Length: 206
Length: 102
Image (cartoon, rainbow over all chains, first blue to last red; front, side, top):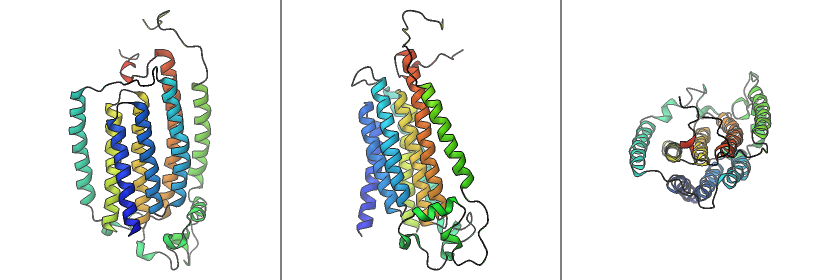
């Protein structure tokens, strides 16, 4: 009951934040609405029993990426309330296209019987989960996620006779970590302090 | 399972459409970046919802973690490019980024 109520509250906050990002013209207000939307998404993750993902969402997304974006806003705005208007015809075209896209997604999502296709990808149905394991009972997902990165799946392999096969997500984990290192070094190189070019003094492009 | 899953899919559809519209209509480069963040977040919400309501299990949550890390990396690089663009053009308007026009 409480869970359902919170689901509605967070869902409305997510959608309202996204609409606020689209509709507001001021980039600082857009950043504020984005914080509302992403933070409420983290609340939805908690309700969907993904507590570690929700915590990472709060720490990395809301605490890191958004602060980075706000720094970008502060470093690039020539005035505190710079607005770049979108023309009304573009708004009309965007409204038409977006409502069509939303209708398409809604129709196709409601057209699929998820109960019937469950287990096609993963090869086993949800009812065949191992005895004594449910995500809600386990509570924390940190330890199962760590096992999954190493190739062990407590939500699938528990009480199974055959040993788990495969290496799990170890290789993607390594690739993503090296990728993050390379990207951060590259970003620091790209954004290093340089003397600002005066566009009126010399125009090498022309 | 059906109605809760469809509820999550609807929320993430709204997020996705809002992100796409944000990318298409904003003239501020930072605004375009925020649209990309919204789209990635919609994908993440779908992954976690399917992890909870179907037999996907922990797979969806692991992929969601990867998506969060990649979104952080993308934001860092795109912000560096935006800062470079601002240093060279003294504006952040993406309509002015037409140096490569033939």
